[in-house]
Length: 499
Picture: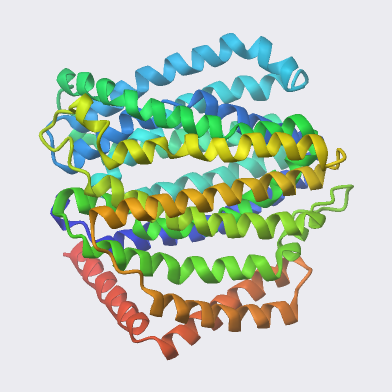
């Protein structure tokens, strides 16, 4: 496949469909973990997940430019990106191991040395997955969906073996993730095998490291903004972290809708079709709005799934899950606009990155948004934590996520105006009204049923999805046309594979 053969809708549905299927495997994995480890161990797992991103800061720096070069078919860009990111990953893992004697007592992880050592291997894998995802997104986006399925299904199977059968507890959780990531990486490498035969172009690495100064600036801003999660651990301890760790993966399902616009970024780089922005926004909101409505009306039902017969008590975090759901919707819309900003900007289209000119672009403004986010959240969080929470773990988690959500909304407004200044895009208000109408109807039925058992919750969720799609097919011509186009596309691709 060449860059001009990318189908935004098909590629988006392929990745989104894979993400939705991984919701089931992910929920089962979470259920397996929460019912096999203590709430304190689960809190430690959440703490490790908060710490590790600080050591994968640079994973997207080179990957960002690699994807742009690959999308423009620059010779040797794939192999060069993989080699460069692999080298950075080893350095990052080494720094993590050197700092481990400080990390363990600081975050009260002295009893979790083996899981922390396993996290070092996870750091290397995350760097490789990030750059391989970027390469595939630029040329064959749907293969990212295949990789997701492979990794998630294997992680679940390994989790059962290591956690349930071998009783390895938290160590078994991390070992399962590491092995699943390794297989996923192997699949990606096989897919890109022909590109990896090409030579490394060191001049690209020079340009990428030069341009990476801006990515590092952006990444450092992201990590600064993420300090709010250290507030969560520092003020609320493992219990507050466990509430967030239980609710966040459920709310994050909404952000999977952004994968429907997964091919928008390389499409804009390669073909400059600005009308794709509105089309992608419609598609994303068609799924994001009903998913948000579902979590707002029955958040406790999903949290009850995580509770076993022990002392875990996650359902009381229902308000937290509802807040995270709204925040996830805001982040999803922001992602679409971010794809648009990155795809519209052509500063590096001659395979060079003019350092001084980047500062005057929309890219630099977008890279600066995390700092504005931090200016809102961190002083506010400190004030609220020291005056209004009374050391209540649930209250701490809830207040922090409200503050974070408000800041995300402010950043969405800014990035929207960045896109509007670059291209005339039409917000599909009529379509949004239809999505909202269908979502309200679906949500009303879900609220009336309000299931409280695991299997019933999942069954009612599926029924809710059917109700929403039925309403949309009845009231919206574009939805009916989209369904026909997708069935036609699938048939065409099946025929191609047979021939």
